[in-house]
Amino acid sequence: MSAEFLLITFVVCLAPGIGVVYTLSVALAQGMRGGIWAATGCTLATVLHLGVAMAGLAAILHSSALLFQTLKFAGVAYLLWMAWGTLNGTGGLKVEAAERQSALRIIRRGVVLNILNPKIPMFFLAFLPQFLGPGDGTAALVELGLAFSLMTLLVFLGYAALAASGREAVLGRPAVMAWLRRAFAASFAALGIRLALERA
Image (cartoon, rainbow, N blue to C red; front, side, top):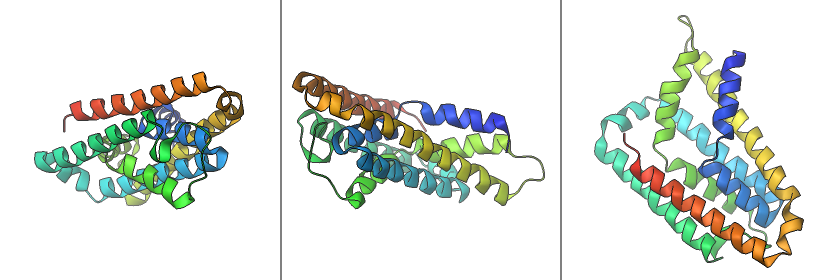
């Protein structure tokens, strides 16, 4: 496994996306514990997408416009629903001090948010083979995929720690919380719009 692969993987995981926004919002609302479970859910979705790519289903998804569009717009609808709930301070993504949610519920939301993005298995299908040698087989592909998943978890835990560390400083400021709620809602909506514009 090359240093180049690890560096590119780190940059890809660091880029703000659905999982990052979700992890930050949960860590702000629930603290580090919630952030850990959110990061875990997003990482599990990454592992599931890796399995899809390795099974060759990403190629099928790419070739089936109907399947791609169905999955894509299910993801768009879910993101817009999350944006609405966050903006109104309802549901599980209140960006304010809230009653602790169960680990299972936080993980489930993280999985659903990320599993409804059909571009992720295609990304794996295009990205991982670039770092395979002529004699490498399935084992090498699994190793790269697991390294990517581990990097995802570590980066998201870093985001969770960052949000949790500043949590007490902002929770007592209603104006700041209102702007944070709007910012997270706008982020979910923007991610939904971007996903809607994606092509197979």
